[in-house]
Amino acid sequence: MKVLIIGGTGFISGQIAEKAAAAGHEVVLFNRGLRNPHAPYDVINGDAQNLPAFKKDLLDAKPDVVVNCIAYSEKHAQDLVSVFEGTKTQVIALSSADSYEAFQRLNRGEESDQPVRENAETAKEKHYLKFMGLADYDKNLMTQVLMDAHKQGKIEATVFRLPMVYGPGDHQYAHRHGNVIKHAIDKNPDLLMAATEQSQMFTYGYVENVAAAIVHSFGLAQTKGEIYNLGEEDVRTQRRWAELYAEQAGHTFRFRILPPEMLGSVNDESPRNFIMDTSKFRTETGFRDPVDLKEAIKRTYDWAVSHPEALKDVRVSYDSEKALADAYDSHMQSLLRRPEPPAPGQ
Image 1 (cartoon, helix red, strand yellow):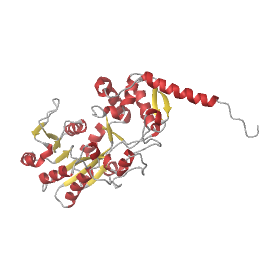
Image 2: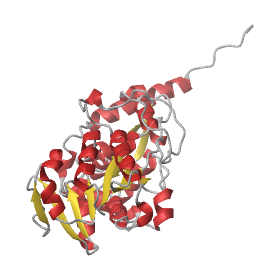
Image 3: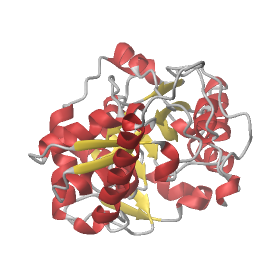
Image 4: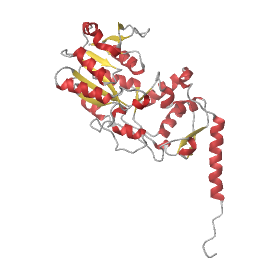
């Protein structure tokens, strides 16, 4: 099939292009002239923020599948529909776990029902990231436009909601497992964690597996008109993630568990989890992750070793961390040594 990727050079979109080409599809990118120098993709120059202005170029490419990796607003979806309406092109858009109300509750430090399925409540507030300066961002409005257009027979649409995606090249590398990875690379013996942080569980997805799942959907009739959660089938605590990275580094952490307030944690009175039910896509399509967890962690860790700049935003002072943990241990030991007060009447 001929696959047109809007974007195609980013963290996830670059992997989609690579996996699509490896599967034998002809790949064309639409962006501002960016290309991967190691991949022989054709590139259509244009502005992804104004697709209708390039409608002729896009339709002349005659794609069987279009993957928009940077559609995040109602207008982006409307533009997609206006360009590909009436064609047989399968239109795929990438959404996010942040579209769920449960994710917004997580950010507010509130509990919610888990796991989160595709039919769960979406964010109550429109343009839910406007507090970050993203005034038009709303992947629920984007999804609604595409699904409505599908029901009306205008396009054939599929939407994927992505979890916390990790792996080589992640622009949020430092904020995924960056602190743990840096401690493992430096072979620092201690790893500080808040008492609640150590047991938190989130759904993650390794980038190559996420990309492979999207490519797997190409041309599958049962995926058209559907919304899917993507991500790993299993979840694990933050402490377990740390153990796995340490094992890859040939290292063992001594976990120093402190009260959340000592580590500056906020809204952390209880573990806050976000677990997505990702079974629907696997059940309906037979997809299985091509890269297992051990290999995913190895590739992620090895990339950090060879790209130390990826961890430049991870600020740690091992001496300060040790002093803080030692002070807490000393305080707790002093409490244990304190003599019991005399019983009443003695």
